[in-house]
Amino acid sequence: MNPTQSWHDRAAALTLDGRAFINGQRTTSASGETFDKHSPIDGRRLAPIARGQTADIDAAVASARAAFEDGRWAHQPPAARKKVLQRFAELILSHRDELALLETLDMGKPIQFSRSVDVPAAARTIAWYAEAIDKVYDEIAPTGRNALALITREAMGVVGVIVPWNYPMIMAAWKLGPALATGNSVVMKPSEKSPLTALRLAEIALEAGLPPGVFNVVPGFGHEAGEALALHMDVDAIGFTGSTRTGRRMLDYAGRSNLKRVYNELGGKSAFLVFPDHRDPAKAARTVASSLFFNQGESCNAPSRVLVHASIADEFVANVTAQMPGWQPADPLDPATVMGALVDEGQMRTVLGYIDAGRAEGAVCHGGERVRTESGGFYVQPTVFDHATNDMRIAREEVFGPVMSVIRFETEEEAVRLANATPYGLQASVWSHDLNRAHRVARALRAGTVHVNQYDEDDITVPFGGYKQSGNGRDKSLHALEKYTELKTTWLRL
Ligand code: NAD
Image (cartoon, rainbow, N blue to C red):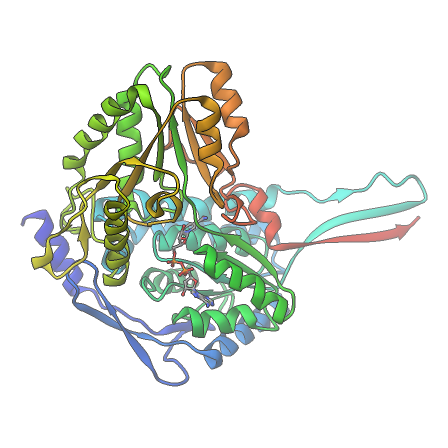
């Protein structure tokens, strides 16, 4: 059978369950209300999803609290939690095709990447925190002979997790790994645009041996289930990933409720700086195209502002546009597809609106059209705006689609100033073979991650997060373990 048809057949055979997962069981929402989830691939209705509201969040938080208090997870020795989480990671991998399919149906990314990137990355994250947790020691303060001060880290209790739709499984795993490994219970509110994999992950975690109540998932809308979770008086921390606008709300909710800890991982407008002393500008062009167009441009760290020295800009733009035919949107269920559908019609309209704005403000547009309209899905061509300036909307605001702005500069100082002239500070990339310049510019850039002569290296061992309005937390690495713990000092007189 042809491989695309085979994925379509498997998709048609899937049973999609949009009910919430509370205290180890599937459950309809307290109100009985649902909302329809449509496929970005062809616009068809996929499944009814439980419309979680305050009563459902209350039930999920109560079950998470009960599970935390009775110690069925938190009081297990780290080595025991490790075993369960390792099994969870193994089961994620053994459900690879099913989870990849759900992810692709939910948010439109190509099936080959759901299989080769998203599912393995989620499993690796859980496995890495499982491995880490019995290798972390507490401390004894150097207080002298007459007293002993133990400095220990304890689980916080109930962690609320609110995640976006662009990498639903990976974002869930980045929060779940450290929160569960340190002994917390979790209530997760996935995006209303992509709830299916989180719900399935909760079932798989139960199968792996995670006690009921430790990991609950309540789907629903941000202003209903999300707000109820972030305002809840019995939630100790919120691990949030999403837009800067909603991140502000998270801080406000915490201020209006119990001052819960808020860890915000927010938007970006990452700069990619190409200097004329780089020996292989064509490689820089290939890298920026693949980094931006991957995931349909729906990545927080997409290098969407490309700053190129004026002397090489024409050649650079020619090299980037030469990459565009290789990134034409196609059926996400075709295993050869590299660019899929935007998540929904609203997102497509937003992206097309930015493209209109870029044209109206005078940048030169390559690409920029909606395609595959006959499919009923939401597809936009890879788009490159040449002769953009940093004050245009396409260069200032997060488009969250396959749209690149190329801005020309004359001097290193100007390049650094333009790169930093943004409220965001998630990532940046410097392309130069002048060692001094590469170090100097990397230091001057106000971003949580700076790449030199590359963009795609990534690893669970390094922190991920931003300066400025890109957030206040860090996901991944051992640093994320600390987020979901409280620091306790215990004095003992000797
Ligand atoms: P969003 O802020 O609209 O939604 C994120 C989550 O918050 C969703 O689950 C949503 O339902 C919920 N939400 C929305 N309004 C809410 C409210 N009033 N109260 C409580 N919850 C609410 O973001 P999005 O469109 O889903 O995701 C895209 C954004 O996420 C982009 O800005 C992107 O840069 C960012 N992002 C950041 C990172 C990172 O690690 N820094 C990673 C991925 C995505």
